[in-house]
Structure formats: structure tokens, C-alpha cells
Length: 460
Image 1 (cartoon, rainbow, N blue to C red):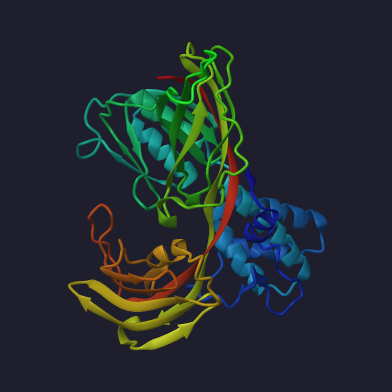
Image 2: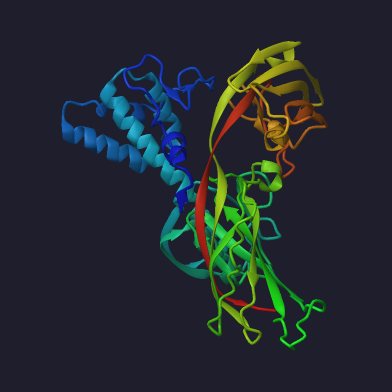
């Protein structure tokens, strides 16, 4: 897997654009110190290690960097805050390299699990994966707690990619795995009577073959008088689903492209290249943030005697959410009325916020700044404005929103009325304090070219 554009890897995957020694450092032209984020002190241990990056002792500097990297991505916010605050060119240089590398691994490398355990339940195995990855896995065994006599299994994982480990547990224990909601929770249900036999893995992504359809055609006009028969053509369509790890929200995909397709007779199913093929980017699911995407490939049957696609290789661009930067903050929204604030990319006209039965409803208009080509309106941006809004309490805990009640969208300006509540996807009311900030975020994104390969797919 690789990033599709060099600027994306250098610019978005870290702080490579930070200007050392400058009073104000920027990322994509965004001030690091000016972004309105929740005030939170840097972890004391992290702060101590960051200070050691500027030690006069080379070995101490190297050891501090290695220790920081080993602590993992959950401390990236601390490292970014430290980068924005440091006055040391040496610390800034080392933090920049470290953040860029950790950010790259976060986006394109899978999380891995290692454990060898005998006679444990599937629930216990999933809990171990949660402990090692930090991912939230909800296990539903259709009953309260662990049922008496629940089957036990043996698992042996050695630096196994997350999705492969999940699938091995699911296959052995007959579990169903779901990532269909727009949150970062993997849901696992028991008593599953179906499975996915054709799956491949690429970095933090799981590709699931979902179907193959065939369409045969015979030419009946314009035939040769000399009796030369045109060969019957058969088009084959292959469809698949992509799941991303919870750390990798998908914003969209680019069209998939087949690179190799060979049947069991040795024939090729790769269609001829079409130089006029339109391949500009598009976004699935309206560019909504989620963990599922879909793709398809067009093939041409090589031999009528073929029964299997022995090898199918393809590639596609997956658009990932690389980072979230607060752009505009409305403080104390319950007491704010008719306020207009301009950010880097958008202008927000905040009307008001009301409360009823613990639910907070706000009305506002978000307008895109800069010149807009009327022939190229970006509805991908406007369709996701509501997902970029966050309502938080004094502790930084987020209220839940599942979409606007009303929306007026022309692609450049979005007027919406959107409710925020305390109830999560499981129907549970969470303990949240009064809202203190409404945040309008900016999404940073990259496009990764991902290669995938399926084996032994049956032909219809």
C-alpha cells in the first residue's frame, strides 16, 4: 500500500511542513498553536521524554525517541501539543520526524496481536484483542454475561493483523462481525449461520468478495456473409466490500482497477484498456465518514470452459481521514445568539441552541469560503458538514448526533437544524455535563493506493 500523492505522505502524515525556529509553526498552513482544542496537560511521562529529545547526550536523545515511538499512537495528541509549544530546534526536528512516522504507520499499517491461549472463550479472546489494540469490540452472545458451558477454543496469534485475528476467532466460534455503523466499534454476534469464504487482507483493510455476475451476449445483426461468426462475448462483474480498522475512517474510494485475472484454464479475464475511460475520483456513501466501502471490477471471460478465477489482483484508492483540526469554536452555545465567525475554509452563522428533555438542538449555516466553480460544485463537502460538528461538555465528552432534522444544501452553503443528545448507538444515556462548546472541524484526508488479491473464486 502506498500514498497516491507525494504531498499527501509528506504533508498530511505528520508535521513535515513545520517551520523550525519560527514563532508560529504550521501544518498545511494551519497554525499548530492556534487551533482551538480542549485544554489538556501533556502526560508528565511524555513531557519528560520530550525534554530528553533535547539532551546533550546523543544516546539519551535516541533512547527517548525510541521510547516515545514504542508508546504508540494514543500519545500522538501529546506529541503534537509538545511540538507546538517547544522552543528547541532539536526537539522540534526530532518530534517532527517521530510524528510523521507514527502517523504514517497509524494510517497504512495494521494493528497486530500476539497471544497463545488454550481453552478460552471467544469473548475472552476478543477482550484480549481489545486490550492489545485499544479497539472497542462489542460482543453479543444473546444473553446476559457468559452462558454456562460456553464453548472454549485455542488461539495462537503471533503479530497477526487485527482483521485476520478477528476472522479466525469468528470462523472458529461461528460469530458474525459487523462494522456497519458510522462509529468506531466492531460488533461481534454469536450464533452466526453464515460466513465469508473469500477474504483477503491489505494493511488495515479487509476485502470481502460479495458476488460475481455474468452477462453473455450474441451479435445478431451485421453478420459476415462469408459465414465468419463473431465470438460470443461474456462480461463478468465482480463486487466486493472493504472494511477498515477502527483507527482508519474511510471517506470514499476511487474506481478499482484489475491488474491480473487468470482462470483455471490459463486464460485472462482482464478487459482491454479503454483510453477514453473516465477515471476521475468519486466518493462512495457521499463522502460520509465510516468504516465500510464498496467496489467492483469489470472482467471478460476468457474461456467458456473456465469454472474458477484462480487469481484476481486489483488496486484501488481509498480516501482516509488523516486528521481532524478544530476550525471554529462557538463557546457557551446555549447563551450565544446570531453570531457569525469566519475560519480558514468556512464561515459559520450560528443562530441559536435550545434544550428540551436533555436534547440540544442548534440551527446554523455553514458557508464555504473562496471562489467556487459553479460547474464543479463539491457536494461531497456539503453532504458531510453535519458530521464535522461536535458538541462537548466541560470534560471534553461528546454529545451524539445522528443527522440533521432539516437541511438546505446547495453545495456551497448548508443551512441545518441538528439535534445532539446523550443517547449512544446502544440506546444508553451517557452521563454528560452541560454543553460548553460547539466545534466545527476541518477534515484532513489522504488517498492510499491499496493492492488486493483473491484466490479461487467460482465463476457462474
